[in-house]
Image (cartoon, rainbow, N blue to C red; front, side, top):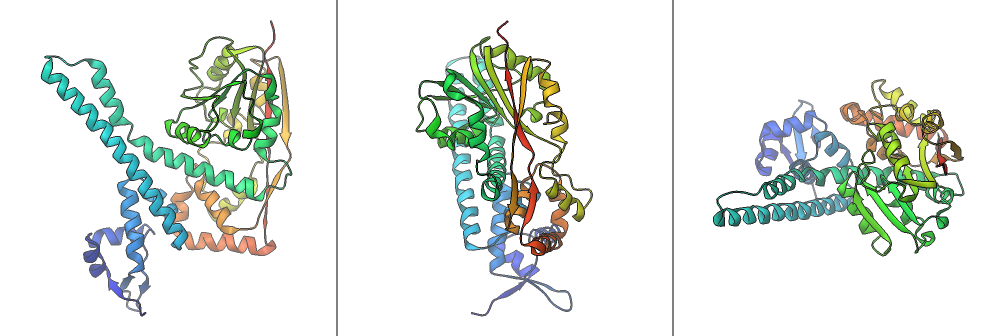
Length: 395
């Protein structure tokens, strides 16, 4: 069947949006015309209505244009199904959120009909519900990006022992009764080692993100001896010396005040207990950093050099202020990436400013990635990760 083409004005009218909106999305690289005539006229096709729907829907759900750019790069059937599935899931969560707000408003309204004053705790609860709406989008951002990064490491690792399997072996977990993980994310550590989880232990998974905790709970719902609690590691709501093993996997460099967090960790850790924290070094994934810098020197894949805050190079010095016994263990591994799409997705998922620059010339960026992969058929990537095992003294 011959494709139909529409001018910018026709396309905008059929989609019930303004010409200005279409031109703006074109300028931002989100919705390029299907065809440009020799005279410079821009034409859109029926396929572009699908892309426009995605853009408008994701924008209404609260995503930024830069995020939408990375979420709508592919238009194959599988990607479209994934996009619509995401939209459905988030709309259902939004509905549940607004239903909770409505219920709270009705409760406050009913209370005011019977009393001449308002209890402050009811208003605080309503404010809390209103503020929580942003968590829905934030949860997707965190969960999706974490999943992309984990997938790259799982798929292309050269090590015979996976990262989470290796980490779990460092904990000597069978000898610990009360276990705490800080920054548990989606629970991937426990998912990959679920057959090794001691049923006699009491395990508490914590994270600052309520959404991440919900994902972890969903992923681990069959395991009965795990509890979940939203908690900031700088202010642990736990009794002194109440935990035998504390785990912090790639999270201390995100903490605002590392020293305050370590004071709290030492406080709640029992005498003779273990604190195991993982991090990476200055050469970790350096080939990817070099690659994006060759495209644009202004690109930074992380807002800060996290390894400078807490990394393999300085971790022992920092930890030794709180623990007498500190050992560093390295996980020997590297990546051999063979799929340029996986590499691209990883880069786009990072926490830095890459979308700001890549979105302006995405086609050139793709060509650079493809040409790099063509040279050898794969890209070798250095991994420099490990953990520190700290034991609290019996004094």
